[in-house]
Length: 336
Image (cartoon, rainbow, N blue to C red; front, side, top):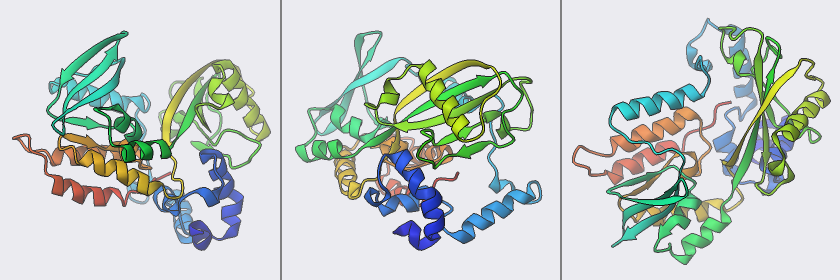
């Protein structure tokens, strides 16, 4: 109803509705109208036209219309953040999985994690979490109240498989991304990272990233890398843009909790969990999964800087200031 009122039936029936069925696994009528406001920046014909026209004037307007992609790929952002944190004295534990968050007298007291099949525990003055809020609630010991646990079982996240094809050619297309609303094409988006830069390197090779939304129990989730590579190749052939060069290799990354699913009425269950966690004074949840938000990277980083801004030099956290930031977070809209 929200999108029909803003965009009309042609754009909705031709793109947004079939695309939504694929990416969320739900009929549009089963999705909260909040998602249209949080997820779609081009939510009017005027905005779409302005965005299209702005691409015709690259270099003539401000740089706010463009993304800048790291020379070594998106992972360069994470590596830079890690290196800066380590230089500042932070210790980062890789290959570690949190199993329990211990509570004592209504406050977080310890965190237990598993590394190399062995349990470890550390005491904690504060715990800041960006894991899915549903996982956080279930990890608390003693257990969370029944109503919070019940809400955790009713809030869902969509899984995503990223299938990378490394091709023996300089470029696949001139476009950085393709979107596929068609029901007979299982992937939703194809991006070519090399086209996000103007360096042209490395020469003679490119990579494609296909996004395949699914559930953790779906057939796609159980497929091998070779099988998923074939799914992507078949999809591109069906779309009329077949791969004709040699595929050097296929790389696959499976994200169990990629996108929050905004079922109708999800917000009351999120609020139940959120309110309970806020009652634990030294536990903070934020980030895309932590606040069940549809966000870009710069939005997530803004949340982190905001959290730091609320913590003073004496270790006190300003909850009122955090509430003000939370109001700002609600205005974030995904930029595609």
